[in-house]
Every structure is written in C-alpha cells, then in structure tokens.
Image (cartoon, rainbow, N blue to C red; front, side, top):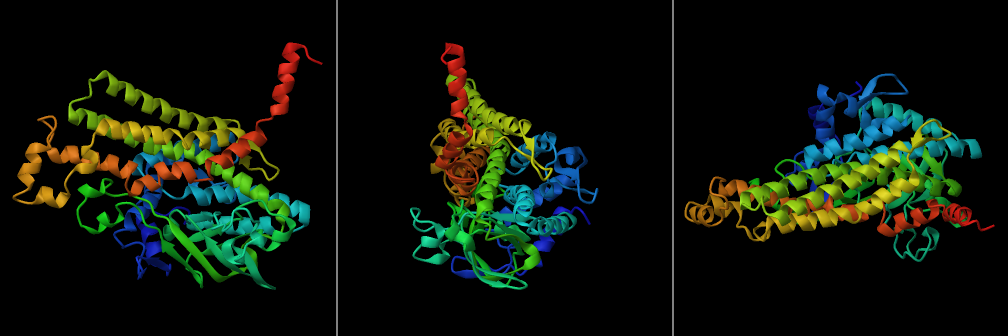
Length: 482
C-alpha cells in the first residue's frame, strides 16, 4: 500500500498509543478529542487531496526507490521541477485548509537527512545513509506522516549545549549500546506531532567538539516507550468544546503544537542517522532550515489566499467593496502574498543537485523568502482586520445568536447589507478572527515570524550566502578600480 485514504490515515492514528497530555489530563485519542481533531483533519486533507485525479500531478509522484506512485509528502526531490511542485502543492493545501497541514516539517527533514547522511558516510565511513534509505522506503510504503523535530528548549542561549546548567535542555545521548542509543531531552514547538506516525529528530544548531552527545539524528515511532507530549495552549482553543461552529471560525481545520519529552527513549541502531559527528550537525541544520524556509513561500501564500478572500467578502457584506481605499488595501494584500509565493518558486527554480542526487534549493533565496514571510503576513493581517472592522472582535457568541429572545436583536442590529444574512456576515468575521487572532493565527501569523527559525537566523544566512566580496569586485570592475 503506497498511499492511504484520509479515513485510513485517521484510523491509523487512532490505533496508536500516543501519550498526550493537555489541561492536566491524559488524552485518550488524538483522533477524537474536539480540540485536537481539527488539527488531525488538516493532515487528513493531504491524504484526501492525493486521492483526487485533478490534483494527482501535484499531490503524488513516482518513488525513486520503488517506482510506485506515492504521496509527494514522502518524496525526495530529484529535480527543480520537484522543488517547484512542492511549493505549488503547499499553496494548494493552504487554500484547502486555511491552516497548517503539518507534513512539511517531516518532509523537509527527509530531504535534508538524505544528502547529509550520504556525505557523512563518505567522510566517516558510517552507514547512516542506508539506515535512512530503509526508513524512507518504509515511510513511502506505509504513507507515514512524520514530525520533523529540530527545536530544543535551549535554556541559556549564551551557552553551548554541553555547557548548560541542565544537560537535558538540548536533547542528547545518555547511553550508547551495541544495539542502539538512549536519548533524553525535549523538542519544543512541535507542529502536528500528535497527528504523526514517526518523529524524526535533528540537532538544532551547529555543534562544537564538546557537544558530541548532542549531535544526534534518528527516527522513532510516536508511541515509543518513555516518549510523551504536552499540548500547547492556543487563543480561543476551548471554543472547540462548545459544540457550535460559528465562533470557531474555521469549521473543520486547525493546527496544534506540543512540547515533546524524550525521557530515556531507546533508539535502535538501524534508525540512527547521526551519532556524534559534530562536523555534520551544522550542515544538517542549514539544509533543513533552507528547505523549510522554502516551504513558507507555498503554505503561507495558500492561507493568505483564504484571508484575502475573507477580507473581500467582509467588504462586500459591509457594503464597502466599492470604496477606493478598500480596493487598494486588497490589491496590497495580493501584492504581498504573491511576493511570498514568487520567492518560494524562485529558490526552487534555482535549486541544484547534491552529491547524493537529490536537489537542494538556492539557500540565499530560500532565506530571503522566509525573511519576507516574517513581515508580509503581519501586514496582510493588519489590512484584513482594517477591512473587517471592529465587529470582528466584539460580536456576540453563537449561543446568543441562537437564543430565542436575544437572537432577533442580534440579527436586526448587526446586519450589514440587507440582502446578506447576519449569520453569514458573522461567519466571515469569525474566520478572519480565527486566522489573525485565534487558533489558526499560530499557524499563520505567529508561525510566520518564528517557524523555521527567527528572523535573525535568516539574516545570518543571507549575510553568509550573499557573497558580498563578489559584489565588491563587480563594483571595482565597473569603476575601473584595480
């Protein structure tokens, strides 16, 4: 079986004993809890879309390992066309879910580890690439969703991993056995990990010689012994417990984050992809970050499409769609959104082959892409809130709207254009609230800032990749300076 249906995916997660804690209690099933289910639905959409013939070219591809058709989220890029289709597919998924669909991080880890293990084996005579190929083959055959886990809690940022007062603030090896390793630590801000079959762990920063135990990469199933997660709070998350749909904004989809604890987790030898080779930790981090910064040019543009559409509908329902300043604001939103997408396409089109045979994006342009993502969605959000008006955050609850006594007053006094039902107007305002302030803001606005690294991380890479010395020489040549 190369590709699961959405329902098969849901059932596969339901069968796993994933240990999830939320609000001080253990969650029995990620597939059935009302707060977590919208996040699961977003992942489910990536399986459903792959079953539709009209999206087959974007959502599916032939495996370079088996030759079978697989979900593109488990694919290794082997051309610039693959890289471009990745961004186009991510925009499609963003358009269909208006949320984070969560499979990109694991996919980006696949491609970063693929080339890094190949080069590490060449340098050190290790067998990590074979380990990863065996894991990848199974991931493609079983159509796994994998969580890519890079971000450690980090503790004191001025200290390296091995110099922390608490050694567990970066995930590390605590025991090496003949048949594998034991690891302890945590990974923070893990998007969609409660909806994943496997977690793929990577180091979070470049490592020095003293950090050997922290230079580790591996994969384990999410129901591994001594692995559990604590779900993060989101704005408006408990609205999902109220039974209605209007106040939620996005009726079906959502995202979720977690702090994941590895409390002496055993990793078998054949699932280890890096184990002490500090010289390749930074390479793995740089490549993963590049792939993931490329991703934001697709997914955030897709969600942006929905937000722009919602803002335009709000203008229609308010009767303001013909106002010149409203038209100009929507034009600006489109301009910013398409700029994000353009950068994603550009860094993909300029990709190049690695020694392992897979393709890496242009790292400079990928970091420019993500630097724009740290800014433009904030302006798109501001303009959407401007167009929507204050009712977006002052509207009464759905329960009040349904109340026999209060409902008629709400319907009477909160109507905009007479031909548009008040409930319709409130629905679109709640969607904008969800995308800009509510639970989905985690996957759009705030994640645009911190996902795939902070803005400063991209600026460091832009400085490193910008080749300022070559630019100086160009100027010398033009000015005839020897």
